[in-house]
Structures are given as structure tokens and as C-alpha cells.
Length: 139
Image (tube, rainbow, N blue to C red; front, side, top):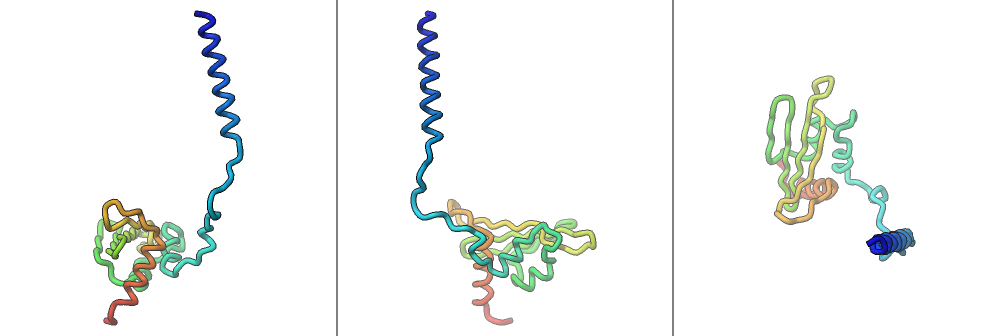
């Protein structure tokens, strides 16, 4: 019995050593290096959304001027939710009152319009809003 325990202990130590040395070996990268997000210029609308939750976040009026009329607008207490339904994504913008009682963008969320579709980025949705705005006839 004692020899069995010693053999199991020795086998465990050998397995641990083998695992440790294999995990510390450097791995060569496969394929091209990933692109850096900051190297890609943001669209003006995406840059506006990137300020969500910050002191310099755009106010409700500025967002409506830039994005146009929302498909769904919901006022709930001290907050407002604007939803833009686009071809591949739904862009939800949440506004809350700041210290001066101005409605400022506090959060921006992009969700896919189709079940099982990959989640789009805020940049992708902002680009769709831009494309939709340029294709709409003037009011």
C-alpha cells in the first residue's frame, strides 16, 4: 500500500513538471499581427458615443442633431432611452441628468438585430447611422 502511494505521488510530480515546462515554452504567433484599434480612425458619430458617461458626454439635443430622430424614444423618470433600429444592429443610447439637469449620454449599447448574429461594435452601428442619414431624403 505504501509503495502504491509513493508511486502515485511520484507520477503526480512528474506530470506536474511536464505540464509546467510545456506551459512556459514560448509560442510562435500564427498569422498576421492583430490590428490596433487606436490606429483606425473613428467616425465622428462613434467618437461622440465614446464619450458616454464622461463629463464631456454629448447632451440629448446634440445626439439628436447628429443621429436624427430615434426609432423609439422612452422617457422614464429622470432618464431617456433612444433606440435606433438599423439593418444589422440596434443602437441604444441612455441619457441621465447631470448636475445642471442637462440630459447627457451616460451609456451606449449595440446589439445584433438577428438572433445568433455576432454583436456589432459601437463603431459599426455608428457607421450604419451615418449611412442611413445620408440615404434619407431631406425633410
